[in-house]
Length: 122
Length: 424
Image 1 (tube, each protein chain N blue to C red):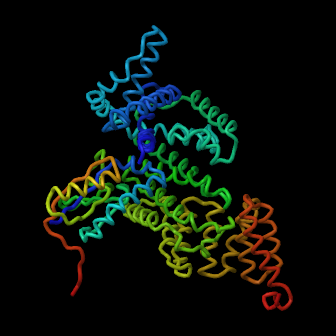
Image 2: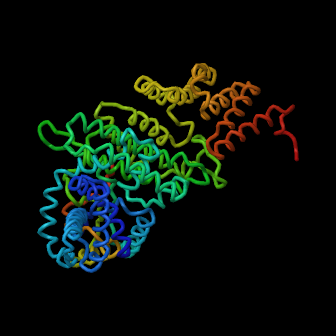
Image 3: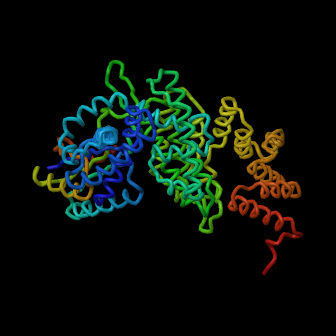
């Protein structure tokens, strides 16, 4: 089963990492990702740009465009992983590994209902 | 990340909000800073044992306030300080309360904190030093290093700046809409100053001064998060990101300047460019243009060109023409002339900058551009005179070296038969 692991963290805090700290975290995460990749279980991985780059379209009638992320919260959605896991325990194990590499914040684990990694015309 | 690295990052990110809130309580910058310092000391002791608080800023505000109030009591009655453990026990209940109290204020708190640093009585260098000390929390030593002055000189600069704003009085009432937008503009200008202080470094100092650029970007993002719908703040942030994205390509291994046309575009930071482009894209939708947005749009056109010859110079010419109307300045016209030389040729550009000669008679770049245009027109003798003048006015050794390279080429080209053909 595919699981989405949604990464939430305080953006101010992540933004206060020095270049070296940021690189060190990314390197540690890469180790966890490599393990999953070798097992053929790693789907798309995304690190999102800061929420200041975000725009929200509220589907009112007519739709309203708002600067900034959908929810203004202490912690923001900063990225996500798609991982193939046997069950919730498996997904939690991956999340724990990722959390050890990058402590702080929270992961939301959501089973994927429909997944279309690429779109082809033909 | 180790405990201390984690705590450092948490303290840095909480600092603007916490010091801003403490300043509102105590209405005195020194007291607010001291309260924050004390709260940090407690955090260093407390957090590794008890784990990180859910909201570090709220924790620091509450502890900072309590410690400062206890300090007053202690000095008046010689009472014992409460145990740290007692403070942390109260944390959950009180932090929630503090967050509610401060949540509604934090935009204006942070804006005020930034705004007092750009008091019009303070010269630009003092504004920057103060902002880096108070808002960013850099140590005097770190700031002194970035400014290439001694610790003592920087200490004095910060102390003087603080004394001046203490006597000038700080506005504590919640600002109205007009006042808020004036503050925003002043703060934006100061952030741009911080960035330029780092960006104008020469090759041998660019690595040392880079933190200034990074800090300016952090402050710009912070400001944008507080004021999400301000197109000029989007423009400013975009401009800083797009310029900083080229940092690795701006100097060669020997510390010499590499001009935009000659830069290795593979060295440009694609992630910063993506963020910069996203922001200018968002800003344009508001159809409320301003100087930062226009400059960011120019930087965006450079970033979008895969090769120098792909640059949309006609569009850059138009953008600078708009900026000339908005913010008439000989430097803007000079920048526009560079675009004009690409679109309509060096003769047209030269005509455009001739009237600027008097006002820019002490400006390095004017003579650099003038020399380059004359050289393209084959007027070598006049070009040499302009380049000589540029070298005399150069601000950094890298600037001088860059012009000298042009001069060498001129001399080489004007030798009979050209030395390119001669064999050594």
